[in-house]
Structure formats: structure tokens, C-alpha cells
Image (cartoon, rainbow over all chains, first blue to last red; front, top):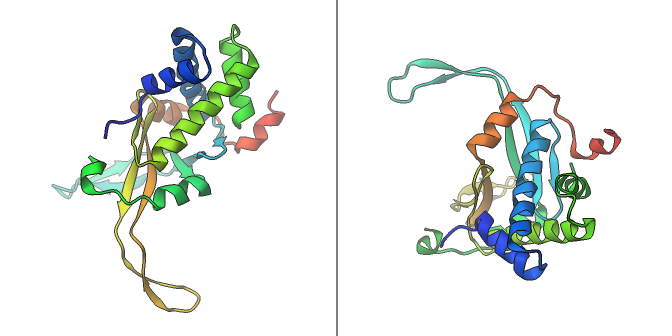
Length: 103
Length: 107
């Protein structure tokens, strides 16, 4: 099953809300851009129904090359994780997909 | 950042659109993301990231309170994989991590 993309979201806004294609495209771009900008400023993001984008600082830790076994430090860094809302979790967990549908 | 602040920030960039229209759009986007994931459809947003469904096979577990053994139901779990641009921008950030709600006192 093909993935949902920005162009699908754009078409839907054009159809449901009646903004023209150019405006709809801009809104979709800015929606994701402002979430990124907020996270880059350190602000976590909460979107009702969907979930939360949570930031975490990771400390330096020893990692290793799984093939050679050689130690390589994994640098301290900041990462984002997504915590699905309870509603989304429940809906997704009920899915019964066959392997074919998953592709 | 919460939803109303997202609407406000988009409005600052796209001043030719009304706040009402932007609110409708933001709700529309959030609804489609939820609906598509709930139907089992992947989401792929260039330069942002992708939402996938990970299958969790049934496994042996036990209830920590009663010690009773049980087998978990197989299930799907939504997983977000940040894109390259998002990862780099977050990692480059020097600002402290702040909770979504606190932003109301920002300006």
C-alpha cells in the first residue's frame, strides 16, 4: 500500500477546505516546518489525538561495530521520539494486517 | 508547542490566510495522519520523517502484580522515524528542552 505523502494532504485540503492548490501546498509545508522549528528550538510538541513529539538528550556511550567488534564511541546527541496518543495506540493495535498489506 | 501555537506560527508565515482557515487545515492534516495510520497506511513526509507500523509478535509475559503467566496479543505499534533534516536540526540545537505547555509564557 502506497504511503500517504504531502501531496495527498495538499489535495485533501484543496478539496475539503477549498484553498487553492498553491495555498494548500504552502500550509502543508509550513505545518511540518513549524513542528521542526519548534523542536529545533527545544520546545516539545503536543498534537491532540495524534501524539507528542518528545526530545531527549543522550549521553556519550561506547558502541561497537557489529562486524569487526571494534569499539566506537556514540556521541552525545539530542533525539526526537514520537509518543502516540492513547486513542491512536488503541486504533493501531487493533489492526490485523496480512504481510501483503504491509508491503 | 500545542496546536493553537502551531496555528499562530503558520499564520505569521502565511499572513494572507485567515486564522480560521489555518485552523481548519491543521485539524484536517492531523485528522488525516490519524486516520491513515489507523487504517494501517504508512506516512512519508519528505524532510520531516515517516510513520510506520511495527508488528509486535505475541510473547510470553507475566502480570507483575499477580505473577500470573500470559501470552500477549499480537499488535501493531506506530513508530516515527525522523528524517535527516529534522535529526540534524534537533541535534544542532543548543536550547534547553522545554515542555510543550510552558511555551505560553515564552513571549
